[in-house]
Length: 102
Image (tube, rainbow, N blue to C red):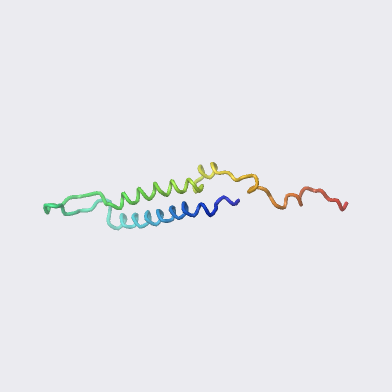
C-alpha cells in the first residue's frame, strides 16, 4: 500500500529529528543522572532536575504526534485507510477466470 506521500516528508523529518533528540537526551541522563548538583548565584550548592529530562519528554511528545499522523503505532495505523485505488490489485482482471480460449 502506498500510504506515504511526498507531502509526508516534513512529518517524517520531524519524527526523525525528535527521535535523535530523545536518544541524545536519554544518553546524557543515563550518564549524568536525573539530578545535577549545581552552584547557585550566591555560591550555594543545590540539586536540580537534569534539563535533558525536559528535552526527552518534549521529544517523546513530538514523536507521538508525528507518528500518529503517519500511522507508526497500531491504533493510528488502523485509523489510516488506503483508498480503493490504492488497494486495487492491478492483476485482478487476469485472475477473474474469464478464459475465452476454452
